[in-house]
Picture 1 (cartoon, rainbow, N blue to C red):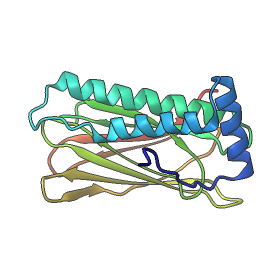
Picture 2: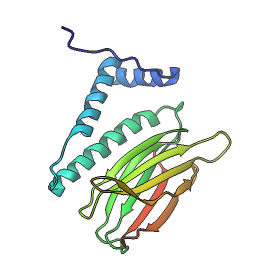
Picture 3: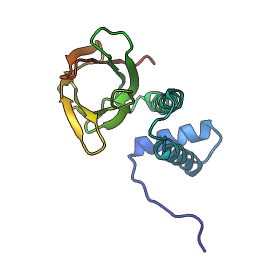
Picture 4: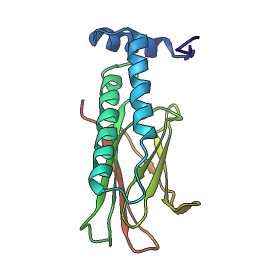
Length: 192
């Protein structure tokens, strides 16, 4: 009986070359590197926390996801053939004062169609953040953001702003939710 399965993945020539360089730098084969990345992704995305999980466990999960994302983005950013990398950050305040805020920062790639979704865990209700990049030729990239408050059955829209940005400057926006807390969003070039 077969213990492993084969999956075909299509990559551009540049992506395959970069992946090969990274694998060689780590002393692994490309297959080993991809298996390792898949295992980490599965581990990060299948960990189930109890309903009333201690905030320490949530913090540890957020830090692990943050570090894994930054590590992968660092390797991609080293390649000159890839689009630039930016840091997207969000801060959700308890009461519009900036005190007791829940902060998250994630790396994003300014490539047309790039998408990322993550959760900001909060005692008062989790906030889901969905990102999508529109990067057309000869135009500044646009970051489309959708923020919603998660409940057991739905995700109630908070806001859906768009941030236009370039590699020289950062973009920021501050919003207020109907429930009385403030949300700050921003994007800035990643330091290489």
